[in-house]
Length: 298
Image (tube, rainbow, N blue to C red; front, side, top):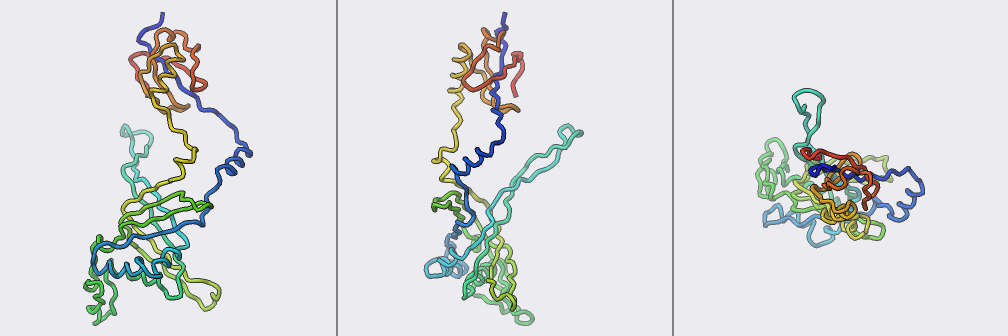
């Protein structure tokens, strides 16, 4: 006779498939690929009425320079997170386990094709100079650094004044649809890579590469939700109902959990606990094992 307190665990196995080149080709043909050459980088105007804002907004608000700053960005390194991790021994000895305790964001880099006026070089030189007013002539003239930003020589500015509130990188597909939208917040340049010039490089162009720091970023993918490529997970109540019907009135006592072989749900049904192999479910081939009532499933 079945123990009325006995529980069983039904585990849906993952379907095993072998590599099929035709499947890969079909996926590429149907879902396409994302090119690297279609993107735009835009910056929000600098806020406030500070001298720093007025200087930089000349490049970003109105006039041909605003368009040039967008169109001249010819390469970008997209932002990505990196977890801070530490090594611990769970019991003070034994194998080392890595655990995360924080998050940091990698450097963000942009490269600009410099126009014949040097607009891009001047913009970022002005921006860096507003972080620290280094525009000085050295020696006895060091104290006579430019005060166009209202800062004394080598005075460090306030982040609220020199950080750009939002920078956006939009990646497009071949049909000009927005695929990935990165929004970076509190952005400011940390270094400007040197640009080489050479008499022998008669067919080379000057590029200006800048490394940025930022506080936070978000990523949105407007095409994914409407593409049908994702299948939303069924509600736990729906799955429990399917299992209950397949198991002859079983009562779910747990929710889905990850296992090494698939997804599992703990159920209780005294009438079939003694014959679990007779179970037929609607979630695929099932592996069933019994558990004592005083055990929990993890």
